[in-house]
Image 1 (tube, rainbow, N blue to C red):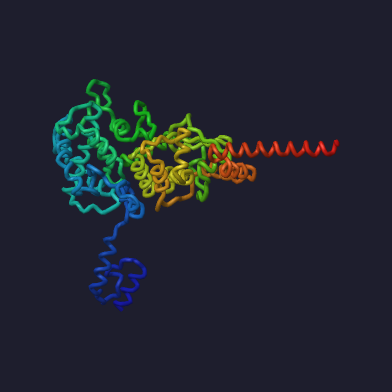
Image 2 (tube, rainbow, N blue to C red):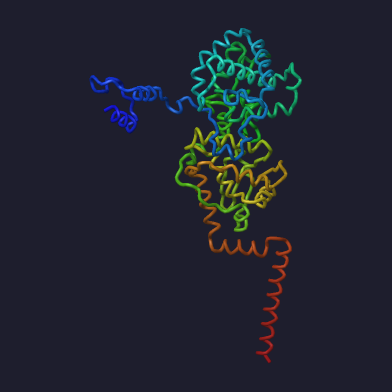
Length: 457
């Protein structure tokens, strides 16, 4: 009987209590252990979860893009031997932030983090191996380090450690603070920041402290990717919605400035997958014109006007791939049904096949190549979508791609494209083709005149 019960337990996946067993029959040890295991089972992710390990299939393609270079933030990379050098500086900054605060009381900050520890633990996709005490220490030191980093940049204060004066280090810290695996929940940062400066937040005086959101927008969110007006005093949390962390803030700021989510557009709906789109050079050969989108600076705002595709300007730097990859990874984990950056990456993956397409975009002012190697830029765009799940694309992009494909597939446009590709793809071929056509016309004229002379004679 015990064997049958065990099998039923395994088949159904349900935990049985001792009451569920037949009266007078004692469960065996295996049944008790399985019952205990099933009772202790927890959901894989909680409702609060927003900080994820980048999925292995995505991470393995380019691990460096998801791994912090100089500083670990949060529990995922805590203790990494390559990042231990910054631990002393982080603690120094933590101490100086608390001394700078109005309370100047370590106990109040520790108590604040202790109250939030369980909620913070639920924000991470993986089980945190740290004890409660260790986790509180990690979160407190890392959060205070970030807040001190922001304040020193805002008030242009000198650092007690000269290494912090290095522009190179500050740049790497900013990039590390945008990586998905290297985050702390925004609500903890905000709680500690508000606790530190309750009387001077947005007070307007000389010692006024701006909101944490404004500091993050100005010094963390990459301005070369997100065209956010950091000087807008009216910008509030309401404008971007509930913020999970800095990676989420970057994505929300980008979408906030996009036409895709405007009430007048239907870009938020999704109908079908994007399976094919001609490359930029192929579209251009068929007669499609490309221009920089001058009325919108948001990367996502592609617009087709007649036979002209308007694309916002993008400056491709060493950091561009890191930022885009982490935003895409976050969408894959948290916003799979609102994956607008994934849509953008998919379209550019089709538009750019080779360095020839990159050079074409550079020539038209759409891409500014700071990497220098056109092939490297092509590989970057082609690699963004590797092992990424592409759900149905948004309606606005789908309409643009369908119209471009239809234009390129029109018989007349295809013939023009073939003519340009085969006879006019270089200046010399163009000159030779024109000369050939001219000679053909002269030959025809000469033949006509010869026939007329014979007839008239």
